Length: 286
Image (cartoon, rainbow, N blue to C red; front, side, top):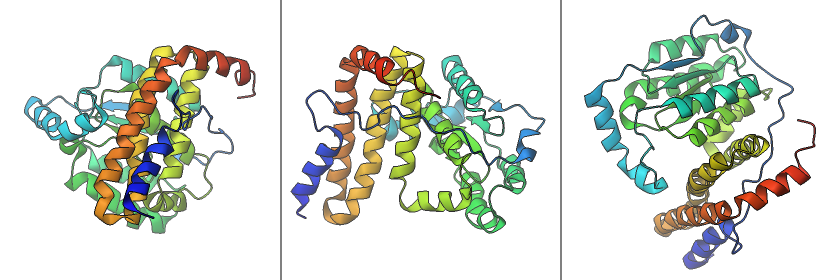
C-alpha cells in the first residue's frame, strides 16, 4: 500500500463522516465474572493516595509534559496537580465498577509500595509477575512518572498512576482496571496489550463513554470526545506506522489530527446522541 493511501486511511478510520463517527460508541464492560486478588481488597491503606507537592519537581514535570499537552491540545495533560473534579470522577467510577482492589496514585512516586502489591497480586501468574511485572515496577522507579508523566494502569500491581488533571483520562485508566478484573488470565492479556493495544484501548474508551452517557453527563461527554479520540488516534497511528516506516510520523499525526476533528464534530451533536442513547440503550440490563 502506498504511503499517501495509508495517510488517507488513517484519516478515514477516525472521521469517515461529516458529522463525526462513533468509533468509541458507548459499550459497558461486563462486570462478571471477576478475577480479583482478595489480599488487595484487604489493604489497610486508602484506595486513592496523593503525592506530596514538590514545586520544583512538579514544575519540571509540567515542562516535560509540554509535547503531550500540545498533542492532545489540553494544558491539563501531565500538569502534576490533580484537583477535586478528577478525584470525584475516579471515586464515583471505582464505586460503580466495584474496584476496591485498585490503588490510584495521584502524582505519587512509591515503587516500594508497588513492589509489595506486585507480590500480593496473585491473580497474575508468578512468571508474569516476576518478568513483565518486575520490569514495569522497575521502569516506574527508574523513569518516574512524577517527572516524565504518562497516565497508565499497571495490571501487574493493579495500580492506576495519574499525572493529568483530566477526569476523562482518570476514567479511561480505571476502565482498563475494570477490563482486567474480568480476565481469567490477566498476565497473558497484559502481554497481548504490549503487542496490540488497540483492542484494549477501544474497550476501555467505550466503557468510559457508556459511564458518561448513562449519567447524562453532557460536559463529561464533550471532554471525553475532545481527549479520548485524539488519544485513540495515537494508537491507530502507531498500528499503521510499521506498514510504512518512512512515513510513520505523518501517519501518526494524521490519525491524531483526525481524532481531534472527529471528537469536536461529535461534541456538536452531543444532545442528539444523548437522546439516542437514552432511547436505544438506557433500558438495557447493566
